[in-house]
Amino acid sequence: MVTSTEFKEDVLALAKEVGVEPKEIHIRAMKKKWGSCSSRGRLTFDKKLLDEPKEARFKVILHELLHLRYPNHGRMFNSMLSTYLKNIDKNK
Ligand SMILES: [Zn+2]
Image 1 (cartoon, rainbow, N blue to C red):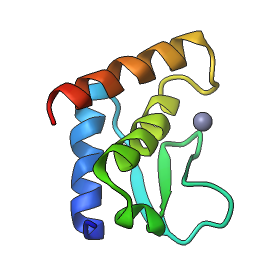
Image 2: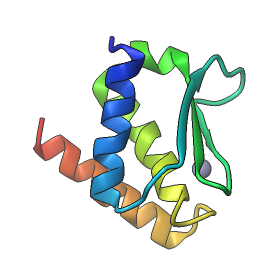
Image 3: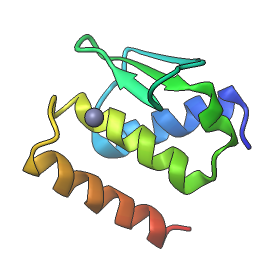
Image 4: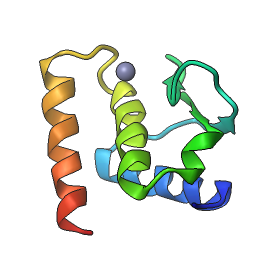
């Protein structure tokens, strides 16, 4: 379990690794999904994520961050996502 401040710090650290700059990071209760990303660079995460283990959190964070580069779930998106997720496992 992390605080929303810690969560945002993780988002910013991962954003640096991915090489993107989210304009805004919001955490609030969401009903249908863990996170979303607007075309203008605003990321929103479900606050239930704060209770999830690190691996699950990072997966959602990276997913949304990569959308700042790739708007869809194409082949590049998926291969980048699995590359970053592998790196996280290594640094555990
Ligand atoms: Zn997506």
